[in-house]
Length: 145
Image: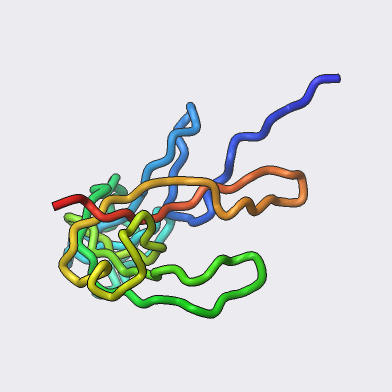
């Protein structure tokens, strides 16, 4: 019996998988006002109202600066706590939210605003679709000083 293995699917619309299944981020930038979005299918700029013809798709940087973080101590079934929920300003935009992992601990000084982080990709908590296919998600990890 042949078993067909499905390639993981992106867990978020701003994750792009190339033909070999390698993930990257995808974003849009408004050429009229400079606003950036973690998205590739916007039909208008949320800041200036410019239509799709002023939105350019680009691959954003995979490093950025921690804007804010909070320690989450209560979660839903299947989500291990505590974890650090973070908002990161990627170099050149956009700003995205995710989980900060691979930290020395869960003390606030280990997730200080201004800290440099990088984007990594991994399995999305073992979640599966109805056909048994997996998802790939992004997370952040600190860049050693």
